[in-house]
Image (cartoon, rainbow, N blue to C red; front, side, top):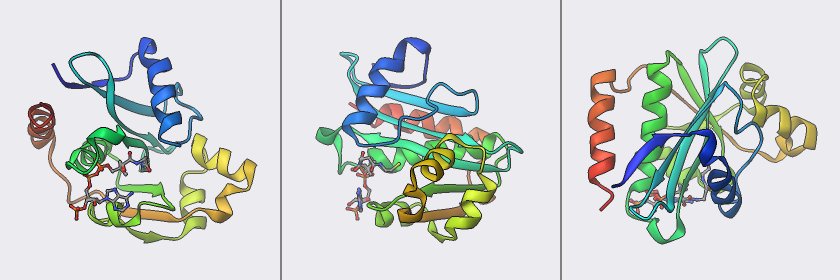
Amino acid sequence: MHELVRLQSTDAADLHDFLTRADLTLSGLDAPSVRLWLLRDRDGRVQGSTGFELSGDGRHALVRSVAVDPDRRGQGLGLRLAQFALTQARRESAERAWLFSRRSGPFWRRLGFEPADRAVMAEVLAGTHQVKLFRRTGQLEDEVAWSRALDDLSAPEELLRERATLDAGTP
Ligand SMILES: CC(C)(COP(=O)(O)OP(=O)(O)OC[C@H]1O[C@@H](n2cnc3c(N)ncnc32)[C@H](O)[C@@H]1OP(=O)(O)O)[C@@H](O)C(=O)NCCC(=O)NCCS
């Protein structure tokens, strides 16, 4: 069975390995403000991950940890995983989604993201692990910020359909 499931403490090591291979940030994976999901194949191998971290006031979501196994890329899975995170963030009442991406701008544009002001992003998401890490290491200055409003996203009922689509689309 292929299912996108909310991260459990027993998944932590697998997620850590998967994100390391995808060259993505590992900070704060177990923080309460961070929401993460894993997609596994029928043998339990991680095929994808997705998630976000909410700002302290809950109005902003920092999309993070969106990754697909290299053998499964180019089949639309990344878009569905990212869309899932956006829908979940909206469901938690976030009004705007943000992310850092230096390499995958065209991918995020497909999901309605536009280039954004890095300083504004760092301010509204100042408490998040990724922003704190990037400030501490100086990486913030090299990052590219992207953003989109969430008010035109699916209603919660459609979220359930999105999940069904995601499950059905991973043979
Ligand atoms: C980015 C990533 C999640 C995309 O996953 P994927 O399953 O291959 O993406 P999809 O098949 O849904 O791609 C959808 C579209 O985006 C494009 N796209 C995918 N990855 C892209 C990238 N890195 N840069 C530019 N465009 C990209 C695809 O070509 C496709 O466009 P098309 O339909 O016109 O051909 C995957 O490449 C990955 O895991 N990368 C490493 C981790 C990472 O960088 N994550 C993003 C930062 S959080």
